Amino acid sequence: MYITLDLESEEPIYTQLKHQVIAGIAKKELSPGEALPSVRSLAADLGINLHTVNKAYQQLKQEGFILIHRQKGVVVNPDGVPKADEGYWSELTSKISPLIAEAVCRDVSEEEFQKLCSQIYAGFQTKE
Amino acid sequence: MYITLDLESEEPIYTQLKHQVIAGIAKKELSPGEALPSVRSLAADLGINLHTVNKAYQQLKQEGFILIHRQKGVVVNPDGVPKADEGYWSELTSKISPLIAEAVCRDVSEEEFQKLCSQIYAGFQTKE
DNA sequence: TATCTGTTATATTATAAATATAACAGATGA
DNA sequence: TCATCTGTTATATTTATAATATAACAGATA
Image (cartoon, rainbow over all chains, first blue to last red; front, side, top):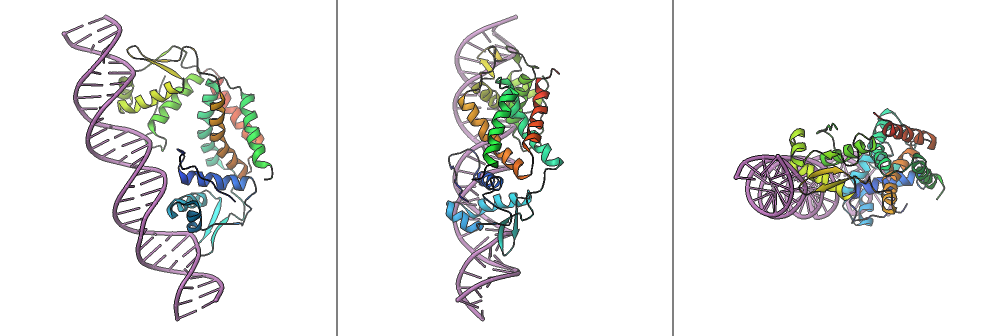
């Protein structure tokens, strides 16, 4: 599981970390039960602060992607990520709606939009 | 064009403003050439600061949604919003990818995802 | 000339992001 | 037993962004 950061990006570091772990799970590069680096070692590897990693891990835990055992360490949720519930759908709608509004303004057809989503979907479901 | 703000939201006020103007254009509630309230009057109406409105307007101008005439005021771009270009597609991909990654983790099928997008698309394209 | 535009400048407050140390408690292995 | 590894908590500081508060300027208009 390689993690790369863009320190110039406007996207906060802890958010980049979260997204890459989630992408890793989606791509099956990370399996249920698989261990993740400790907050200290990952922070050292990436050259960032322990608390930045901890913030990302805490949120991933809160959202059900990982489990944190106080003395054992961090593992990908062995039971798998919790299925989509009402709260999830609601949040997803809030996040996608502005993107679709802009797409409509720019004359992007529903077919073109879905084609892009389909390509991204394929990129995650393919092994590797 | 009614604008409502959620001051409790984590989404910055200027971002909420931007999204609502873009949604208004997508829904045809705002037509090309139509005037928008001045920075001062909109700020007063919403009970927020002039600069917060100005920040939203400046970014909307930068992205081609509106034009600002120094003494005339603010209008929806009379030539329509610029079509999707390479930069747009690139940014859209960056924004959607994390959402699709999480969807895959939560066992949301591509069909379910596209169904949601389709519903949101319909909400914008329908006259209302 | 008073009033309306957007614009610019400066300063301040509040919050979030990131870092810097330090310490604690439980588990593990030498 | 002891050093070492875990996550966790606490405190403080720095940096950046968001939002506000005034103030002033320049051009257009009625």
